[in-house]
Every structure is written in C-alpha cells, then in structure tokens.
Image 1: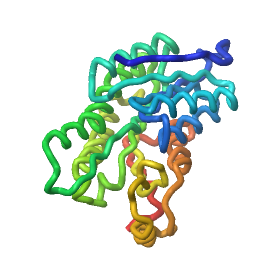
Image 2: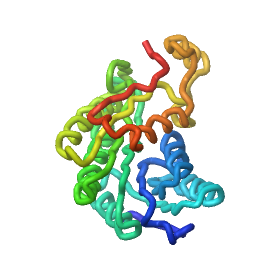
Image 3: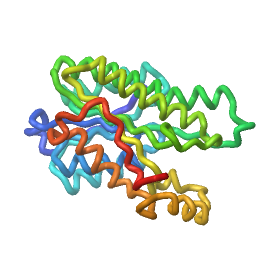
Image 4: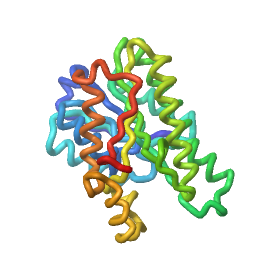
Length: 260
C-alpha cells in the first residue's frame, strides 16, 4: 500500500500551479527533474519505493529553497493496486496532475548465461508495465482536464546500444519507446506524449561498480567526450513539458552527446 507524507508550503496557491509526478525521483535523473520543475514553480510529487531517506531529504531541500508544495509518496510500481492508490492519493491532495514523468527503472545486470525468466519479468514489470499503468490511470484525469504531458525516460540502450548483460533492461526501454507512440495516439489531441533517450549519465547508480577505464573508453565514443550530468537530462524533460514544446508530440529525443 502506498504511503504518503505531505506538509504544504504556500498552500494558498496550491491549485494555481501545475502539478508534476516524477517516478523514481528520490535521486539521480528523477531528483534532478523534480528540482527543475520546483525551480519553475511546479508543485512536485516525489515518488520512491525503497529510498525513503533520500526522498525526504530532497523534500526538505525543495521546501527550503522554493515556494511550492511537495508530496513524498511510496509505491511499488510492480503492483497495480499500489499504483492505483498512489494516483488516487495525488488527485485527492492536489485535484490534478498536469505532467507525468515515467523515470523509475531497475537494472538487474548479470552475465547472459545467468539471466532468468524471473529477472526478465521483474524488469518489465517496473520499467514497462508500471509506466503503462500509471499513464492509463493518470491519462484518464488528464483527458478530463483536456490537457497534460507525459514524458517517458527511455535509453539509447533501447535504440541501438545493445549490452547482453542488460538485455532485459534494453528490451524494457525499447518497449517504452513503443509505448510512447501508442499513448500519443490514444490520448490525442489533449495529451502530448514524448520520450527522452539518454546515453551515459553521471548518476550514482549508473556509475556504481563501473571501472574508471571503461568509462573513459565509453567517453571516447561520445562526440562531446564526456558523460551527461543528470540536470542536462532534466532540462530536456522540462522543455518537453513546457508550452515552448506545445507542438512536439510522439517524439523520441536522444540526449547522448553524439554517441556513435
């Protein structure tokens, strides 16, 4: 069952601001997205599953720097009942959701020979089925509003950067691109659905247990000769949610520094 803790700030304006939910937003790309939206006067919803401490530290940071309302909510994205409850709690608190960023993902990397059906299904449940269910439930509310934006965080791994050690992750990210196209068709003309496909990003999770020499060799494959900062992905996500991107729909944008 999803749990929720929220202490309103500047509550008088709560219904005057757009509301964004970023899944997997206690750290990494998701946290950078939350900060970018808060900086731009959105009420923000920090979703986490196990990283409660990081989520509430981020909440405190936002409340100390921005005059927006912040909610922290826990949800296991592999369980439909928790997803449904999470969406209902958000609607009850804010009355709306204007932007959804499907960012949460897991990667169960191991040798190809060690991959199991259970690994594959667990990865698909969180990385692909979860975004489908969240988009379905939230999309219903957005359609009633006749406005909204959904942004899926895929990966170049889902396009043309195969790694057999993470083939289940790669398959889920390829599926997320397909989901983007189908949701854009389903929710037209009121909800724009787009996808961001980052390459290497300098998050703690992505760099964990990765050899420094390997990172250097990967950077040589990038035109800009460096990996991305999480906030550089967040800038693109915020742009796609903004009115400046009002005619961008059903698109997949690579943010990989020119990976080849």
